[in-house]
Each structure stands twice: as structure tokens, then as C-alpha cells.
Amino acid sequence: MKYGIVKLIFFLFPMFFIFSGCMLEDHEANEYKPTTMPTQKYELIVGIHPYLNTQKTFLAYEPIIRYLEKNIPLAHFTLETSLDYGDYERKLYAGHFDLALPNPLQTLESTKHGYRIVAKMKPDSVFRGVIVSRKENHIHSVEQLRHKPISFPASTALAATLMPKMFLYEKGLNVDKDAMPRYVGSQYSSIMNAYSKDTIAAATWPTPWITWQKENPQKAQEMELIWETPSLVNNGFVIRSNIDHNLSEKIVTLLCALDTSAEGKKLLKDAGFDGFEKASAKTYIPVEAFLKQYDRTLGLPK
Image (cartoon, rainbow, N blue to C red; front, side, top):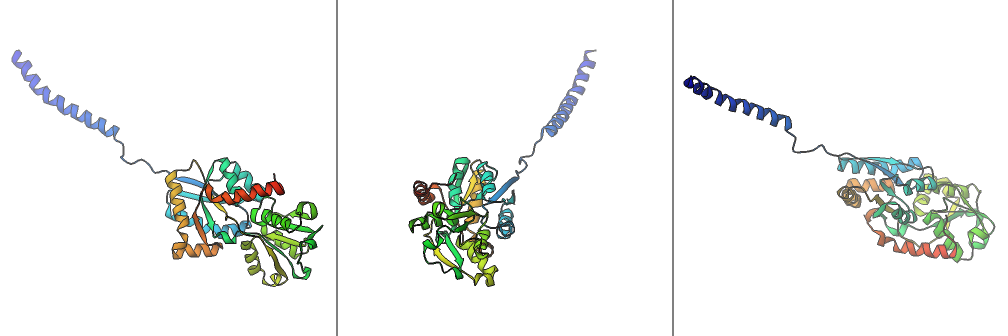
């Protein structure tokens, strides 16, 4: 009897280890997890302040957006336009955009709404206001604008509104008191108001003025630039502060290197500007100084 029990134990003992081993293998198989987790896809909304109309904004910036996407496979960028400056600012200050290209005033204001300044357009020399009129008006003095309508794209446009208004003030004309400012919604509308004689003069900035002349050569022959303001720091590029830091750095690096390759140079040429360079809040100290002076003198728009 004892011999039978011993024999049974010797028979079952190896079977226990075999069975246990099978259970262990099954358990490990069920518990196995891959060593690499699924990669994250970033969905990012890009907002360009409306210094161009919707069609021209897409023509200028959509290729640059696709270039970023090609070089950052984990990111998908959506370029979103705005109806006008007011619409754009509402979205920007609500944190709707993940990446944005605001004017310098909006750039500074965006830092109060969860954005950080990481780059800017270049060069600064083109960021100035210009005032144009029909040649037949023979404008040579600000006195000729007194009590006359003058078109501006928007009350908060820095280069195309605030800088020209300060320029005219320093020459003896307070536009808000001594003339009739009209905010017409876009740079091209401002120019066209002067061309169509709805206003005596129009304020804009070099980029849309030059483009408008190229696209309307016959009309441009009837117009002339009568004044231009000193330049200031160019448009900023901001990113929401909660965007992944490594992703932000990759975006900034790609943008600032656009003018170093043939592909990038073509994208910039088609977009109508020279490129980007790194920037921070300190870069915009001159803009802060201008805005403080403007506020003391004329009062910033609300």
C-alpha cells in the first residue's frame, strides 16, 4: 500500500510542475504589454491675424502649415481664419488658438491670456504704417485731411492704425477730434476706400500696400504713398503655454530655419515676408513703450 502511494506521488509530482508551468505561461501571456505605448497625435489650431483676406491668408500660410506637418508627423495643424480683427481677438483672448500670429499689440495682450511669445516675423523695418491717397488730391500737408474721412483697417491695428494716428498727431492732426476715422475691416478695404474716393486718405502697412499695387497695376497708377511712419517690432508668433514644450521647440526651430533652405525660401517668398526669428516678451519692450505713450496721448482703443 505504501509502495503504491509513493509510486503515485512520483508520478504526479512532475505533472504538477508541467501543469504549473503551463498556467504560468498562460498568465504571462495574458499579462503581456508592449514596451512602447501608442503615440499621441496633436491637433493644433493656427490663427493668423486678418491683415490679409481669407483667400490670401490660406494662399500665404497653408503651405507653411503643411510644411510643419510634414516635418512633425505627430501633429495635425488646422489654419483658421477670422472675419475681422474683433473676431480674431475674441478667439485669441479666449485661448481658442493653439498657435497664433498676432500683431504686436495683440502679441503683448495674448500673454495675459495663456500664451507665451516664442518668435516673430522679420524684418522689423517693414513693420511701419503708410498713408496713401489718390494722386489727384495732391496731399502734402496734414491740414488737407482736417475734417475729412480717413480709412483704417481696424481700431486695434498697430502698424496700420495706431502708428499712423500717432504720426499725424505729431504733425498736428488729432484724427479722432480733427478728422473722421473710418474702420473698414481690412487692409485692402482701407486702400480701396481711398481709391474709390470714399475717404481722402487710407492707412495701411507696406505688405498689403505693395501686394495691392502688384495685383492692381492700373489702379495703383492713380495712387501714391504720401507718408510713412518709423518702424517698430514686427508681428509676434505665440504658443499656448500648456502646449508640450518639445513640440513647441520643434515648431519654432522649423519656422526660424525656413529661410535657410530652398524649399523654405520659396514658401516665404510666396507668403510675402522674409521669415521668422526667435523672440520673447523682452523683444516687445519697444512696443510696450509706444503703447504707453499712445495711451497717455490719444488713449488706447478699448
